[in-house]
Length: 354
Ligand code: SF4
Image (tube, rainbow, N blue to C red; front, side, top):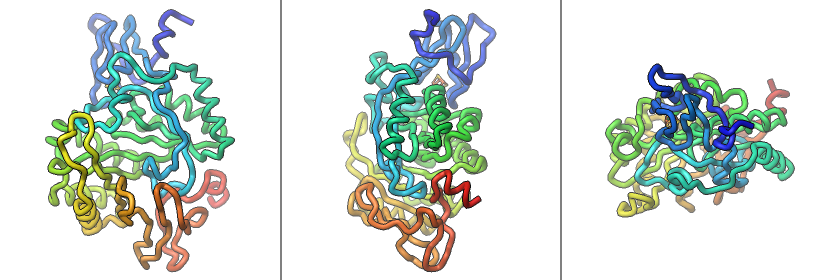
């Protein structure tokens, strides 16, 4: 073990710059140029003597076994559980960050620094508890991509697929590196103007829309989430443009409209009214999306999967649990036989069907 090993592991996705041992990180859209001894914007990556290191490798900041519906993924093996973990750091700076303690911990990181072997062991243990998949979530997995993919590859070899819950701001190289271990993504599309992205998230709309298109073109399963923030991204025009963009990619792409709760630097903004959530859902349908869901609003009645052809209820959800599931292991409406896009089979079942 070198002295550097106490600082994590050598990072992937970077290049040497010409001047004074600076390096350029190529994991996300920021492309941080990092002088020797300094960290990148996300604080998870540091230049040590002209080499980029991933400081959050093996650093488990949050861990749990969640319903896959909580990611949210509604067209991905309903009713299964997913072993979920996150490490500190984030490449955005959302004013209403819902998970600020983990995403922006400063230099004092929460969580447990573990050998990767321990994390893998925990994931394996979850297999015994019937977890169906492994999810990289809670913070932005792009900023701990090496740790996430090492775990994903380990569990993939044991038969478990992985999920990436992301703000969609990675480079194309990172996106392409996810397969085959990562098979499904939930990508935030936080608004639909560059102004909103710049002022409210610190990110770039174009990068995210390009990544949604890229993930679909790679054949990965994609669902999209928009947190509806009153007065900031909830105008009819912006929602029509956003959902129209998604429908233009695929009318079958599930869109989750999520309720905002006051957090972090947006404590002065009220909870999203139910009326706004319903209006956004109608706009999504008007733009051609077949599956528009409302999240974070218990009792809204809009978390069920309905056949777009005959209106048969196919999956009924209640508080992240299932009351009805006619799609798992089937993939089509039993009444009119319309195919419902999604991942309705476990990996071995799917191979058998193929
Ligand atoms: S992953 Fe972190 S260090 Fe790398 S470019 Fe993005 S913000 Fe900068």
